[in-house]
Image 1: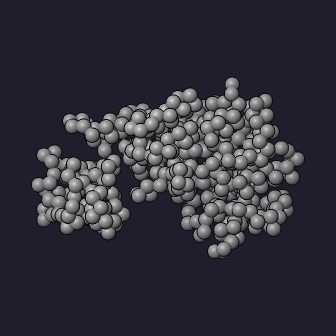
Image 2: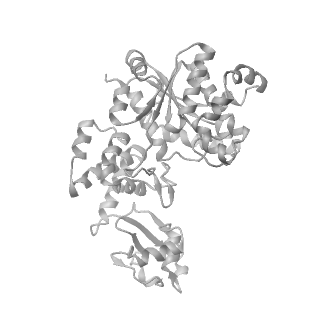
Length: 409
């Protein structure tokens, strides 16, 4: 079986590693228990989490054992990494609910049967710690000077780092130590913003247990212009179909920049590298075939094959007549609201196609809004009942590819 490190390296996952050759040899000679942490600060995972989840799946397929660590304890403190302000404080009930939602989404990519993977919550041990005992056993191994120099604290130092947040590195390091002691976990992986926390945990294991532990970070999922992927006008690209429909999810990947197709295929699908190279070599209009494959593969993985097929059919339907468009996202609006006419900008705002009426006016002036196939030229246009089709629907389009259906109730 191919070495998991080589797989991740070839596909472009790895940004940094504590001991590259040692990690590669470790993954070659034994079945390694490793972990990635996910703080449940929202009720769904998003595309930013998908890259580490894919790396975990590749590792599991190569014979290693993942621990998906839900940060029920650390989320009560808040990770200061990459932040200019303090994170919103969540209640224990909110955190527990969010963690329960994460579990179902992980099962799409990882096999938790027969201890092939573990899903743990660090609240189970962090919330039971006795403060003085913890300070004596763990706190004595941390240098405040070194901690303040860490990248994860730099931005927060400018605006004011709280003592609460200052504990985050110590808590995450203790997680690594706990998992090393209780599960034989030797490797922590995570986003590149976690580098300081990861190497701190590996160092704690060396100091307390005299053991060898390793760290690895992933590249950020960015566009060719260096912008984080998964950001839409409506917000984050969530994995929960109640927050982002399978159709919208599919369309996001169908519409990625040509330059990003190869990277996304490598990082976010399990397609063989030979097939990825073939698809990435397509040029001109042919590259759209590669985008369809990309969108279908990711949507199928997250939402299931049936939803991916529906989304693909709906996307194609918008360029044909007489084909099912039931998977196109829609908004139901009381027909009485159109009795005297509704401003087009208000309708765009209600459907979420724009974030403000001023944005709607600007898009209309730029020729970017359509009703069906007819471009809207009048920013004062009022939509009435007569604008709806016989089935009481109205199809709106923003730009070339963003569609939304309005349904009367």
